[in-house]
Length: 149
Image (cartoon, rainbow, N blue to C red):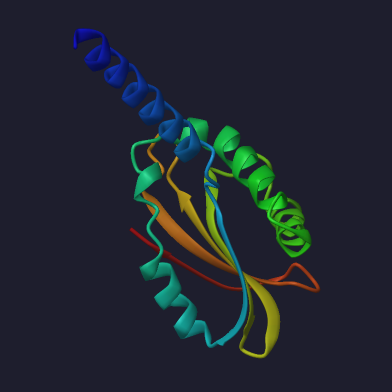
């Protein structure tokens, strides 16, 4: 009887451990190829909807490593996502204190764009804020931005 109980505990522990590993490998950046059509004001609603709290306790000193990992994960989500990751990489300098959390291929105010939501924070602070960038997909120009806490 004791052996069965111990075996059950070991199996349960292994299953929980594997579940934890699967959760750790989940993409930290969500990509949507919805091609939705938005006004600038409507993109602010996306900013309000996206949860960046999982980064809120991370120091901004870790942003560069987290950003690199998120962009690598974004590139692994298909050709269009890889184009978005390249555009984000080209548009923002490497030392940027932010981590992309959500990227959506969309049309904003009639311009084919990527809507990017990032967790960010001040120097020597935490990644406890979020901001929105609307980047024109053809030129890399930032056509709209907003920030929130």
